[in-house]
Amino acid sequence: MQSYQDLKVWHKAHAMVLDIYAATQVFPKEELYGLTSQIRRSAVSTPANLAEGCGKNTKSDIANFFQIALGSLHETEYYLLLARDLSYIREERFVHLNERTKEVKAMLIALIKTVRTSS
Image (cartoon, rainbow, N blue to C red; front, side, top):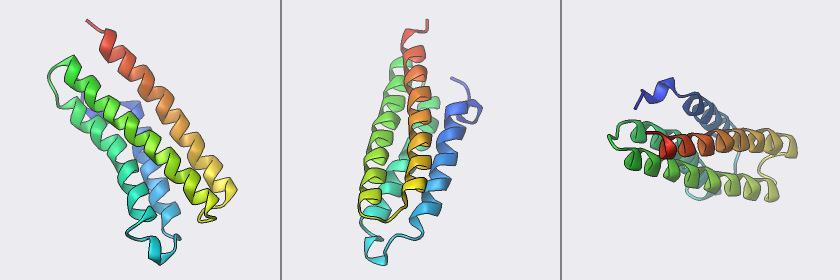
């Protein structure tokens, strides 16, 4: 497998993480060990699992880590929705972050399919 830094989806996921860190800086202090921590951890898990998957030898292992990254991305999507509904982020910021997650999700799903069907 190629280096994770050669993957366009990894770069998009990394940029998403940076945006989420910026957005969560204004979350209430009482959420530091709650929603702030959870959303950051799930967001970071996406590019981290892409990186870890690139270090594996078999297609099955690679696809498994990419699938875990996708699960973390779904988790991040929910936390963004929750943050919006709790009024921790404004609608405009939510829309921007949600669009980023959907873009990464589409790219990641395509990558998983490619890995699973490649010879």
